[in-house]
Image (cartoon, rainbow, N blue to C red; front, side):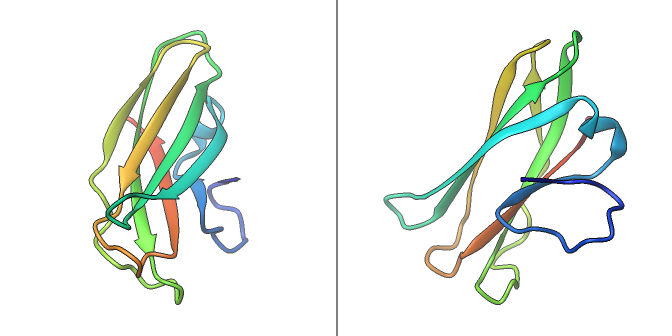
Length: 112
């Protein structure tokens, strides 16, 4: 479900990629969800858990891809996700494109 940075494996799609080592020691991706909206776009959601006893802010963005793994649109803007200590928070994003979107990738990084 979550990809580890600097691992020598292909990046999984329909997954979360953690872009720095500091974050994967603090955050667990509990679950991922994707669904078609009424407008036929793709909505994705990741449920994140803060494993620390401190408030945590991470940034997330999404990329939406077609069945050939080409981007259907530019990656979304980085959004802050605020997670209370030992608690959950969700990140959500919607694609702009409709049926062309087949897969997605959510990226997480430390708040900068």
